[in-house]
Image 1 (tube, helix red, strand yellow):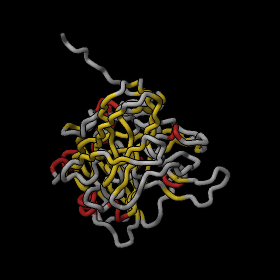
Image 2 (cartoon, helix red, strand yellow):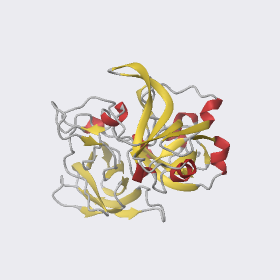
Image 3 (cartoon, helix red, strand yellow):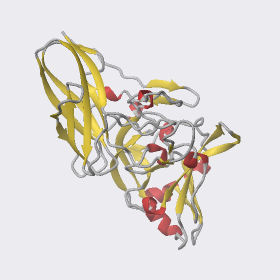
Image 4 (tube, helix red, strand yellow):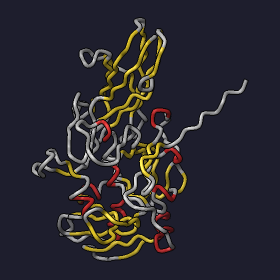
Amino acid sequence: MNQKQIILFLTTKSLHPENQESPIHFLHKWQTPIKYFYRRNHFPYPLLTQHHFWIQISGRVHQPRFFHYSEILSMPSKSLVVPLECAGNQRANFKPKVYGEQWEEGAISQGKWTGVPLKDILEKAGLSQNAQEIVFEGADFGKKPGIHENIPFERSLPLEKALHPDTIIAFQYNDRPLTYKHGYPFRLIVPNWYAMASVKWLSKIKVIDDAYKGPFQTDDYVYYPHEDHDRDKFPVTTLNVNSIIQKPIHLSILNTGVHEMKGIAWTGNGRITELQLSFDKGKTWKNATIQSILNQDYAWSSWSYIWKVEEKGEYTIYSRARDSSGHNQPLTPFWNRKGYGYNAVSMIAVKVE
């Protein structure tokens, strides 16, 4: 008897602009198929022309110039397995609630990105001695609340991060050209940072000698710890240590016996060194088995645990990850007004009958 094919779908959060979650709980391989990669947009998809096959380099450089798609493809490239996580992933879990797209756990996806190190391109243009930040402009644009004119999506990186050898201008995903909805023809990939830094449809790079103050740098993607004032704010950058439970699914009904639990864990600070599970709301913890990709420093880790359950009843299960920098997932999240960086312990409830 033939098994029925199971078809997965993205979960729609908004249509205009398109924002959709990945079916992350059902994806157990290292590479997310592009059709299941989450989609995050601030503006409508751009109308691409032949001009978007050029990247302009300007500002504090000795030789302002353009790089064509074919020239970038001819340069030495590298491939990296990198997860991209929206800074608002799991925003729906904050209490009290915060405004913004109510992402659950699926605003994260991972795959193999191939591209040219950004530093190689900047070296060809020649950075001036007073260069401080690099600004990246995508081809997408539109209206942002509070701003009357159309603006592009634009972000900057400090010089040190921009010149890191693993910050790349990608032109392939999982060994195929980038797709239109995920940044074709060029996407900046910034490992270890939240995905707002990985600008899609990259069209312009500008080197500046001061701090960039665009709205997606100093208004959005900023942690505001207080509800009624902006004191103590600081920028969203590095991924927080995090994990999710993929199996069993939240609110599942299980039989007594043996069950294999599965999930993933990731961090922007080193590597995952420990994944623990609690079946008594954090009183005691049990170690899961961790599996990582060899020689891929940025990839998430998969984990598994054999759960032998003999007593019927309702169970609340926590997962928490620890990384090589000593960061643990906390029991309670760091609440902030715009709902970024949620990384409290992952939690599901199941019933055993």
